[in-house]
Amino acid sequence: MHEISLTAAFKEIDLGAWEGLSVAEVQDRFPGAYEKRGQDLEHFRPPGGESFGDLAARTVPALLELAERGDGPLLIVAHAGVNRVILSRLLHRPLQRLLEIPQDTCAVNVLRPGLHGWEVAALNLRNLFLPIHPISTTQQGDTR
Image (cartoon, rainbow, N blue to C red; front, side, top):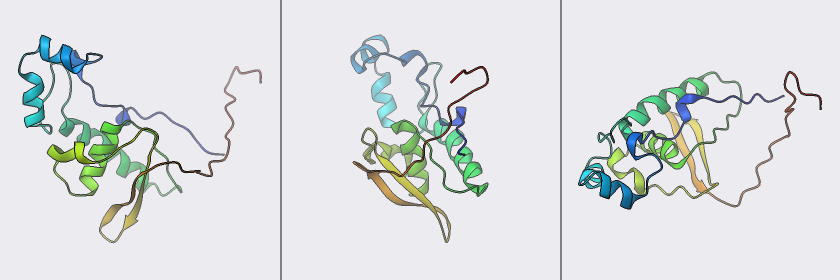
């Protein structure tokens, strides 16, 4: 049976005071801040939030820890920001360019161990059939 677990390290970037706001609302409520973020994606933090550098610092070590366990294939379902910082680090790209990495809704990235650590084997694959076997969803207290 496959184990499913939620890992806080893979939550999407925390936008703090910007959470839930449109770009126009951010620009209206925080004049000049959205543009500053665009100039320094790696380090800029919205008030009470995190930068993409912060996001990379929490996600990449968590990925490597899970991958090093060697328990077989690993599937991580995450948002585009999480995916992009992980891919940026593995592709040795600056975080300032992370938005150039395509991440379509429901796309799949494939990572594998290489000669010099983890590498990106496929990027932004879409319309795939992945042979994922059903798992038991019965939990304690469930009467199914």
